[in-house]
Length: 238
Length: 253
Image (cartoon, rainbow over all chains, first blue to last red; front, top):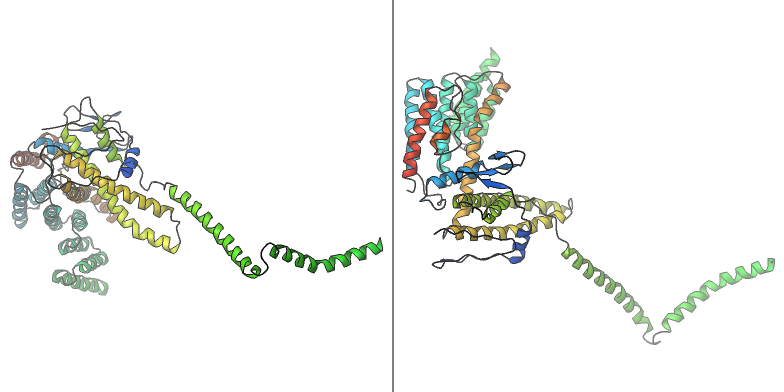
């Protein structure tokens, strides 16, 4: 049963209808509520014809710099809710959509297969597709999943770029991985590798040291650090 | 005239002590002679402290009634939500109201996080005396207002769906993290150009698939594709179509 209620400023009311709520929530202090009501300024906004988007009133745009309004996220959420009418409200974070993880995983495995065959163009395509699927996860799900999936896919993509000798893109991806998942050693490892590819050994050493600050006993990072230091000594001697 | 001057001078010199003695006798003469030596300092203390108390009482009353400056500027998400709620012809669809409520919850969570970060720092500054405590009062007032706001949002959530109230704020937390990750991912292209500029090299093999910003709506992925449409873009659109259809069917697992 849907209900619409109009809410004039200055009124505070508690909603209870039908079966009693298991745990009645406290009502807020009316003095503070009055302050909140006083702070209200109406915003000119209209609902678009498809009944799921908000647009700003004068310019009919989702994201309007002149009105200083940005409804992109709101519209995204309302579209998801509209397409799933059995979803009355965003569920708690542990309700996940299983086939999304599967899709991401499958595409990533395909990419891995291409990577092993050294067909890097195809591998890159697969990895990019996997990443865009991973990003489409409904936003209310536990963000740990998206974090892991996205960082893994991008790390593999960075490796693929490295093998195709496109060190700039590899570095961009590695930095994205680090920004998403700071304490993962692979992200720092990939960044150091791409910097070595670019010839910047000092920055690579710095990146590895940052990685070691997060995971002090990581063997992979430590070994690579020694390699780079050996390389830079040889470079200095020659 | 000469004699007069001397006479006046003599009179002035001698009379100083006389004046003191006279005024002292005047004051003490008001009270009983036996208690004269005790009451004078007592009366002095009473007058001084009394005036101090009276002044501080009125000053504190005035200070308490002064309303602190608002710590945050207006709350656009809250305004949007209430505006939508008040629309009656035609009334806004529920999906939009729910989404607006979730956005309001997200904005509240961000504000609470900011208040929690700012409070100890500001308290430190006020303790050291670097800043006046006006700002601290504003912060404390904003904190109280946020508590009322949170309760209000939870009540509104419960009015849509029973039991949604306690869930909406964890949902808001997850959505904040999700949006942050998405934004980072979508900025990868910009990061790439920045690095190209910094290291003077060009990237090759840039992926031709533009980031898809609207989920699960098949038609939207095509317009946002890059101009060089190659088989990768088409594949991506096709796969996302399939994914979206199967996803919407089996959402609530």
